[in-house]
Length: 143
Picture 1 (tube, helix red, strand yellow):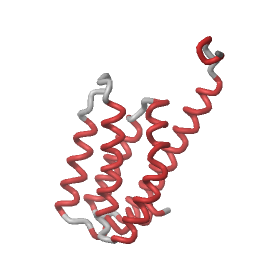
Picture 2 (cartoon, helix red, strand yellow):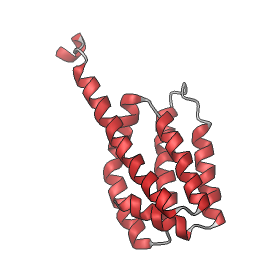
Picture 3 (spheres, one colour):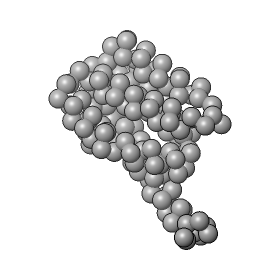
């Protein structure tokens, strides 16, 4: 709900510099090499930066502080999700859609996309955890 609200406000408050900086992050994420051993770490750091930059576009310091606290709490789960699934394709598409809503000043659209994005990350995490728990334990895991 916090990120949804921040997206709504950010779309109304954004500046050309905000759009440019969010776009730069998205383009950098899109050029990451998925075969690079550092891909997941780099992607996760850029993901954190992407969300913080959109929230900063709201110009609401207290809102940004609350969101940063929540993001710091949930960030380990985002890392687990990307480690389990290795799937940044859906998130990348969602980031581009969020960027376009920010660019257009579409406050309702960015709010909805922000909510959907957080929810889909949670769903991917749960799917990854379920699939891992269904895998047979290896001999090394049993000792």
